[in-house]
Image 1 (cartoon, rainbow, N blue to C red):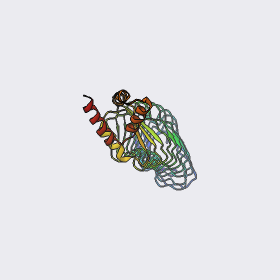
Image 2: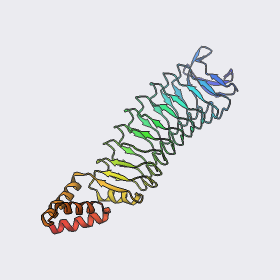
Image 3: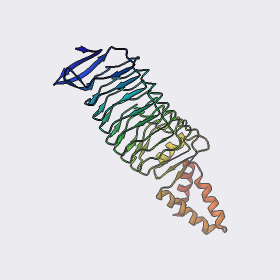
Image 4: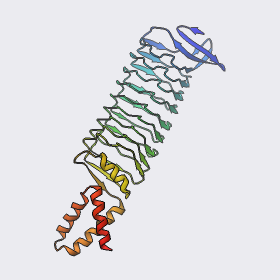
Length: 317
């Protein structure tokens, strides 16, 4: 069925827009057609429509389908009303003219690559209640400088912020337990990031190419770090860790750029270094010399440090 450039279907007493054939710069989607409420924007309904610069979605719409506005290359403004609960995969992707997107508090789900390659996007507010940021959701949003994630978020998908070259600041909510592969790959402006204490794993290439990152603290709960997690982090000077797992430390060391170091703050490691210091103070006349020697040991590579401490602890027995 078609009316005023809108094609649509009626299901269960509700209208879903399936296509738009007009060439207006300002498009107001009707709240109802022939007295029947419009509740959904269907898959690809406005896909690659180049004429609209402003689109207003009416109250009553609850679902925005996959690729609904994908490729609307001249779109610079869109109004998403309260009541919209789901935004589909790629729904607003490849819309380089969008600078700001305001999502209503009613939004519960955001599909994968929903806003990917929106290169003009500088600001977006994710409402409380959203639990998952899907894979590649903001991939390639090169203009995005910061984003605030609500505490309701418990999962961030693969590559969610990959290629966000302008992203400088982001806080990971406490409920997130894993940094997936390629999550922040290529975020070359990211200078600092705080990982919550509940993080248990960091995926491959998670931070690769974050060349402005100078330091990061790996929480004690982390039990695995994927390959190349910090590859290309040329500005990295220090990684602080809280683990006694030698394998994790060696994996980290392989990724580190020249001049960067690992600082281990785990109680286990601190005790080992402390015991070495206590022993050296007994056999070295000047305590300052003993402390200098321990600092030298602590600055060794993980392999060399483990070798020394192993020999020392064996001898001490």
